[in-house]
Every structure is written in C-alpha cells, then in structure tokens.
Amino acid sequence: MQLAKRLDGIGEYYFSQKLREIDELNKQGKNIINLGIGSPDLPPHPEVIKILQEESAKPNVHAYQSYKGSPVLRKAISAWYKKWYNVELNPDTEVLPLIGSKEGIMHICMTYFEEGFFVLVPDPGYPTYSSAVKLSGATPVYYDLLEENNYYPDFDELEKIVRTSSQKVKGIFVNYPQMPTGQLPTKELFEKLVTFARKHNILIIHDNPYSFILNTNPMSILSVSRANDCVIELNSLSKSHNMAGWRVGMLCGAKEKIDEVLRFKSNMDSGMFLPVQLAAARALALEQDWYEQVNTIYNKRREKVFQLLDTLNCEYSKDQAGLFVWAKIEKRFKNCYECSDQVLHTAYVFITTGGIFGSAEEKYIRVSLCATEEKIEEARQRVINN
Ligand SMILES: Cc1ncc(COP(=O)(O)O)c(C=O)c1O
Image (cartoon, rainbow, N blue to C red; front, side, top):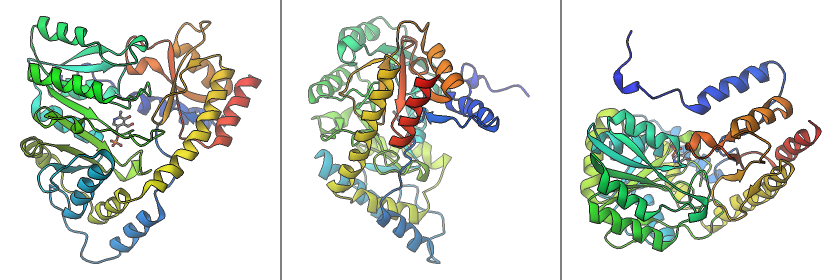
C-alpha cells in the first residue's frame, strides 16, 4: 500500500528506533544504562495517586468526558497559572486540557497551518515541532539558537526570513526553558517575541513543559502584555509532576484560539478519563515543597551528570534548567553520533546525540537527569573502565 504523501520526510521517531536497538542489546545481557530520555522515573505525589484510586473505584466516572475537560481541572489550571506565573486565565474559555502537550503541538498545526505557509522552528529544538508542521502540509523554516547568543533567536535573522520568504510565515515555535540547551527565558526575550509576532501577524506557539525543573522562577509568555493576541502556550504535568505516562497537558490562550483548536481536537479525540483529570487537578494544587523536593533530587543528580561529563571531557554550562544537561563533546570525536555510539557500545550507556535536535548540533550531546544518582555514578564508572 502506498503511503500518504504527507509522510514524505517523516521518519520513525528517533527514540522509538533507538529504544529497539537498546532492547536488542539488553536481550544480549548488556544491561544498558539509559541516560537518553526525559521521562521522570520518580512517582507523582501520593495524594495524586490516592485521588486516582478513590475516584476510579466509583461507579459513575467511566463515561465519555466533555471535550473541553472537567471544570475541576480547568479551574485548577487557571489557579496554577495565577499562582505561579501571575497570569489570569478564564477557566471556562481560556484553558483547554490536553492528552499531553505533544498532541497539542499537532492540534495547533492542523488548526492553523497548511501547504503554502512557512512556520519558524528553533534549531536546536524538540523534533516534534518540525514533524507536526510537515504533517500539516506547511514547511518548517529553521532559525538558529546559537550558544554565543545565549540560545536566543537573532531577531535580525527572523526579520530577514520574514522579509525574504517566498511564502507567508504564519507561526513560530518557541520553547523556554529551552530543550535541549536548558536556556532560561527573560521577560525581555518574551516581550521581543510578542512585538515581533504582532508586527508580522505570526502565531507564537510557546511550549513550556520545563519551567519548574531546576528553576525557581517559572515564567509564562502569557504574562507579557498583549500576548493574548498572538500566543498559544502549551504546558504539561509530565515533567513538573512526574506524570509523563498519565498524559495530561494543557493549552492556554485567548478564547477564540481555544475554540479554533477545539474545532480540530474534538474531531480527533475525547475528554480524558475523569479520575485522571481530578488527580491532575490535585497535582496542580501542590505547594512549593513539592517542587523543592523534586528539584533537590534533580540537583544532586545533575552534580553526578557533571562528573560524568567531566570524565568524557565535555564542556557545559552549569546554569541549565530542565531535565537534561547539554554539553559539547571532546574534539577527538568526529561528531555526536560517534561519541554516543562509542559510549553505548563500550560502556553500555545510552546518551542522546545533539544532532537529532538540529543540523548544527553535531558537536553536542544531551544527558538526562531521569536516572538515580547511583545509576549515573555506575555509568561514570563504566566510562572510566572502558
Ligand atoms: C520540549 C518538549 N515539549 C513537549 C514535550 C511533550 O510533553 P508531553 O508529555 O506533555 O506530551 C516534550 C517531551 O519530552 C518536550 O521535551
């Protein structure tokens, strides 16, 4: 059967391929230490689990749910945004629960983009942005985030792309704290982005899943004045609340944008299981001590990752937020693929190659903090001994 043309240029997701290779090695008894993926290994708060258990034992919670999500979850999202980002969102109209923010990326692309349009995508950046743009029929145009520019966009470059493009630039993906570089945003950066987007009538899609990880000042681009005109923000409980497998995310923005995305989304899926939504609402009400506890653990792990990177003679900044450490590899390696393959096949440790996040990133690797300190130390010992 011939595949649909929209799949041209869309390969299998890197991790789905790589995990098969790791499975093979594990079957051969290699016991791979996986420092590749940002899937939190710690559990959610016990209260969150308790609500899921109690609610799912009730007889009347198993029906289809509203496409717009439970009012309890929408109110919790709105209160969370007010408390931590100082952003006011109407829970009835400006919030849309999602089955993870990854699906939201696709919904937004299918709602707004199509053949004949360009969408700006960060390089380096989360690979799903460009896949979703391509699947929508639009064309991704990459903008550079360079180390010497603090991994911020060069606004002159953005202006030039918009001015010289043969097709209308309709959207821009932005993500701070940035994955994979760990760069934090500033209010000034968000303001500049909003000014740029308003000037050119471009939709900003800000993807914000890492703002609570190793960061004490979570920021939302929606806090910038008039951002509502041109911004949709995605957020997620996957990383901040250790709920990656639960699939709970959210989309926030002006009422008309929520309604527009819902027009697509309501044709694709249905509301989440109610007990999951109620438990997620509880997670969003957790206090400061939750984030502190989680970050204390990530902080210690990060120290271990720094030691591992020192053993590999990498260069890195200690000021990174999010679930990873981004590091420049030693010059003796031709590129990140050689470095990652060598570590995988000699020390049996999996580290992600920077190259999957952009064409210019072949000198970098990304190490995940989603493994215990003991595992990271064991990985370091294996590297030393091989
Ligand atoms: C930058 C970025 N955005 C979005 C996601 C997807 O998160 P979710 O679990 O909410 O779909 C990830 C997951 O790794 C990510 O790194």
